[in-house]
Image (cartoon, rainbow, N blue to C red; front, side, top):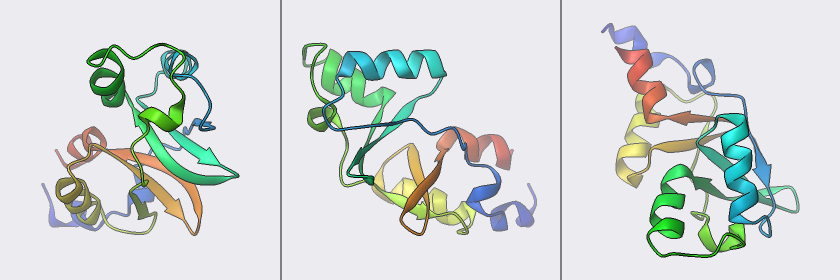
Length: 128
């Protein structure tokens, strides 16, 4: 692995496919969106501001393990506050943030807008 791989900006390998939901969207609706879109996370927005994220892991831990109903609203299962990284930061900075925060998916921002998501799998795939 070359040293140059670490300097690559997050925007170069992030996924630009973002699905956003509002805080009242049900866990059932979200799971269908994730299945149909082949994605592992959705961003929760309130009044066009990102307030949280729901990942496939949130479903396993919060919904399945706690036997929550399928109509549970996003606001009750989202991870919040949303952890973000600027689109122009390096992959090593993204990896450090994920490690420190103990997360596997990181929202990518450009000013106040969420423009993508980078995952630990993205990092491993790129760096190996």
